[in-house]
Image (cartoon, rainbow over the protein chains, first blue to last red):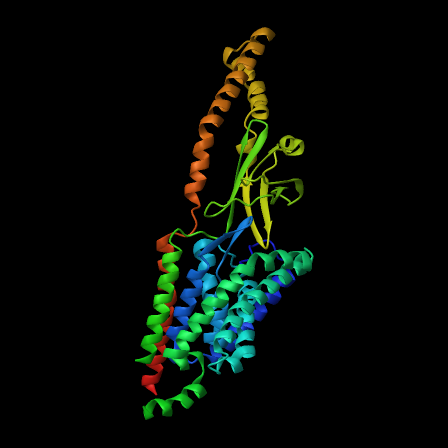
Length: 211
Length: 213
């Protein structure tokens, strides 16, 4: 999922960088500083998740967990992913500093999109697990499409690349769907406001006090 | 209190991830190439050991990025190709690039001196050596002796170089493997430390601001 240096053309790099900068700015503006530790721990989770590799076909794929970040952090996914990718680029030469913007946008934008798309369902206890699964699944799916798009805008045809990247990440999508589902269900049970479901928590609180 | 639960959960989660990732594999392609006689031999691998099969290898002139040659890796991620005539003639430094697709790419710079070790150098030395001999001797040596000296030197040089190649091949191989071993456990822990440390610093400054107000 990390695009290496020297693959993308300058316009893609620049626009990716600009979009990532905008997203990060919004993320930092919207960030509630009481949640800074949550952001950093999820950032660390993302940082480590990329190191778990699933051998597959000719290469291997790794977990991304951008869906989980999106579900929990919303816009704060941008700074969280940016920081984690920065460290990966410096420590392991994953991706690289030049492609940092594009990589950040490719992974953070689907996270934020899923956050908005699935929020209504996430607040309903019945549909929550499925919304969370969809969040994990879709975030990876959209990220692969963005990767394919970045590559397509640079040289190779979109469909061909998209097919390869999407097919390679299909198992990851399913795995991440389940991981996100369990993580979100767990968080919703023990700590609903971490998911930004304060309204929901408010609804539940009177019931809790009655008991 | 409550955020404690969450932090514990998140902590547990990434500790879990950490445990899974101990034999850490990185998604980075490494490539390594060296010259042996008339061919250039190369190895490629994703850090962690899996081989990128049937991936494109592009050989470029390092000076201007002009593509000289392309080939593909075999099932073990290895490749070999004869030194392009042009590269030999102009003593070009080669940039060897592997392009796996999906945005994964790695490159290796192979300087001319590293792969053009025999004939051309042999020739230059062979032609200069007799001159030196002549200079030292102070007399023009007979054509016959020069010939013998130069061929002898060239022969010895080639034999030594071949033997060296043979002996050094595995060492080069080992060296490159030890150089590029993907993320180490310390690096991963360090990264986590950085991230949490940054949050700590931000939280500290935020709390200071709050106090002033």
